[in-house]
Length: 525
Image (tube, rainbow, N blue to C red; front, side, top):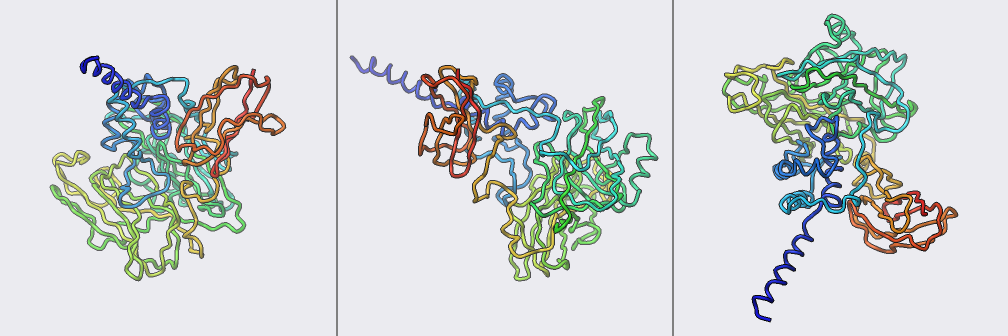
């Protein structure tokens, strides 16, 4: 055999190996999209297209590649090099490489039947149990044609006593037109008067809700988890307060109808530790180089300082807020000893992607410490978000053409040990018990079910670990041990096993590691 003939099978082998290494949609890419993208990109979601199926992902493969490389998607404004926050929507370098290599390799489908169960997004909420208070806006038809609309709706709570929120979530009546939801309590009846005076339903307002004395109760943005507090903590709703629901309807949503509702789950009041949500850093009181005034054709940076006169406190999270010409904002604390604790930094402020961000653990702020904010505003023609052409002088206010510089904090009075309270399950050192959901879906699935000759086991692991996969009969006896002391990799994996020779009947498939135990009923025929 001459060298040329020998080279041909070698080249064919290299091409085969190269193709084998190309990620496929079913087992490599779909889990990434389901975990990070489809909460917005599903039929009826706020994303402009769905990414649930292989065909839909294939149609937008090039766009997906570009957006994950540029970090435009999934949207996560905070800078992870400044501080890490709870529930981060960030793709790892491995996940980005998987998507890029999939697209570069021709975006192969793989074996479709091995894909994880497609997520579903019922409009029924994700917090288990019955909410203690539900407020629902009147049916509203968006008028947002060429510009965004911020519409506020006021509903009487009819609460006879103060209550404490342990969890909160907003359920968009029409995810295709609800961009984000801000919820406030108002005890003054002022917002009720605004709503009553406007033809409505609701009344338009930008930035705030127009009332001089409201307290924030919660924030919802697409893809975010419900706002919830650790056991024993709660945010107060004053009795007889009105609930003000401000909804952002994006440009282009005109004609779409919405009936968003907000659900509150209350904590038992005995022994509750009250958490407070307040704008500790606020442009009216805390600026060190104010007032907040940005002349036309200028870029200016401002600073705010809040001396902590509240005593020792524990802060759970932060919510920065500016308007359209804001370009960046960061917040940090400085202890009495001069040590700096970084809270959050958003390098490329986008008014349309606001959110409330919780820390992975409670952060102690001692009495005498200072909370700081630094923000930069770009009031030039080069800022594409500038509402004025040509630029005008910008002053403080709640209108579209005004500006704000606010950082809301959620905090509670400090108690010893608060620094160890975890708000992100990724940090849990104790076993993650009975996690039954994978990005809102079942972590463990078997297909076909009933199984005849073979079954495919699909599972998603929180972390790589040593574990086992066993089949048990209804008496709890192990009848088949498929894996024992095997490494189960982090993320999504599909295994194929034979069921031939097993008696027909009902069994339990159990996946066990030191961190998880998952089970699924399986019928064998």
